[in-house]
Length: 239
Length: 143
Image (cartoon, rainbow over all chains, first blue to last red; front, side, top):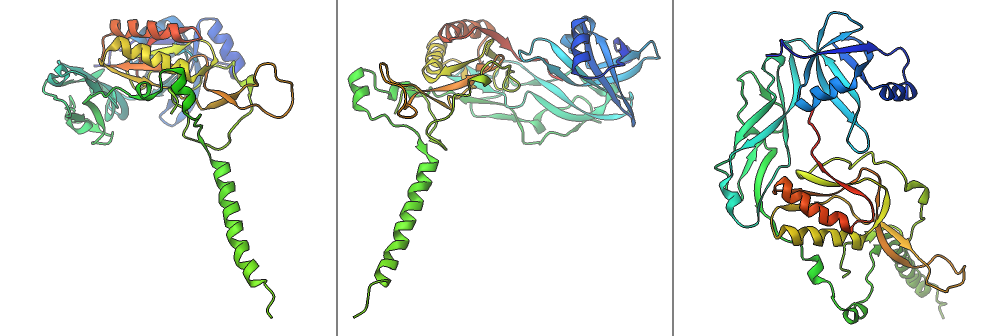
C-alpha cells in the first residue's frame, strides 16, 4: 500500500537553533527532525513547496533520502504551524518499518445524510474528529468512513461503533469517546434577559462579579468578631 | 444582569493594564477546535464584551436557529477608566468595561452544522462588528 510513498529530498542541518531555522524557512525550506528505531535523531531541512503539497494531499507516509542516501520509510508524527496556522514551520518524522505496529490518529469521515438532521434546530456535534488506532503501516488507512444515515436526534456514535477497516487494527481511543452526536441547539437567552431601554438599564444595579479576596476578608472579620465576644464576657470582673 | 457575559467571580476587582502584552502572536486557541469553520483575528486587541455580544447576535440573526455557534473567547480582563474632566490622583478608577485579550491568530467564533457558504456569510457579518481584521478559516490538516 505504501510501497509507492512519495520521496522527500532532505539535507542534514549542520547548524541548529531558532536563528538557523528561521534562515532555512526564508530560503523556502522547512526544518524537520527524523527520529525512532533507537537511532540518533537527525535534524533535516526539506523543500517547503514539495512537502506542503504532499501534506495538503493528506500524505503521511514518506520515503526520505537524507543527503542522497537510500530512501527510508518515515511517518509524519507532528506538524507545527505559525501563529495564523497558514504555514508549517516544523515537522516531526518517525522512522518506521512497513510491518511494524504503530499508533496513529486516523480521521473519521461521516458519509450519508443523517435522518435526525431533518429536524428543526438539529446539529451534528463532533467532539472527536479522529480516533487513535494501532496498526501496521501496510494497513494504515488515509481515513475511516462511517455511515451516519440512521442517526436520529439524541443518538450518538462512539469510537467502539466505528468499524475498523482491517481486522488487525486495534482501537486505542477510549471506546466510549463520542465521535458524533445529534442535538437540538437551544438559542442563548442572554440578550433577551437584558434591559433594552436606558431607563431600565439605569434602574438595574451595576452587578459586578463577586470578589474572592473581599469575601475572604469579610469571613476573617466575622470570625474575629465572634472570637472577641466570648473573650469580652470572660474578661468581665467578678464581684 | 448585564447584556453580555462577564466573570461571575474574580480574585481581585481591578487589575494592571499590562499593555506591553497586547501585541503578541497567539500560541494557543489559534485553530478551529470545536466547529467546522471559524473566524480568526489577524491583529491583537482588547475585545470588549459588547463587541463579542454584537458578533454573537449578528451570527445568530443570520443563522436563524441553524447550526451551532461556539464563542472561543471570554472577557476576563477588567479595564478601568477615569471619568471625563476628573483631576489625576485619588486612586485607580472604577471598572469601565470587561475585555477579552485577543492575540493575532486567536479564533474568535466557530460554527458547525452549516454549509461553508452559509458560514462565510455569517462570519462576514460578524467580522464587521469586530475592531480588528479577521479572516475565515477551516480546520487544519490532521496529522
